[in-house]
Length: 111
Image 1: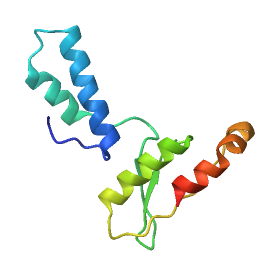
Image 2: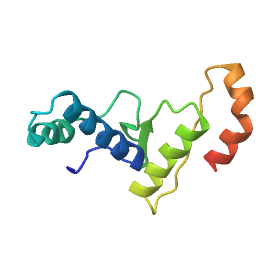
Image 3: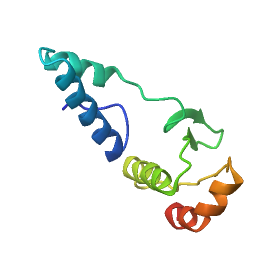
Image 4: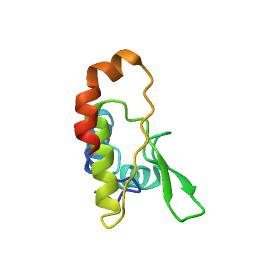
């Protein structure tokens, strides 16, 4: 498996699944082709997307995680990548019902 540009175990699992699906759909596809595709993949929009750096040196990322499990996985990836850094989270709820339904779990996963 090639070294991915993406962070987190969930991205590594998705990459392995994509490679397996490509090999199942195209059995004659050379492994070097799928490896190059994974190496070149920069990620999806708003999925741990690097936005820049503040004047105080804080790195800013954007992620659309809106479910407690997704929030947890994103924070796990951030902690893995930046183990000695303080991580601050700003959560923007999009739906009242989803926020209401997941409020306690979101609070647990964000801490």
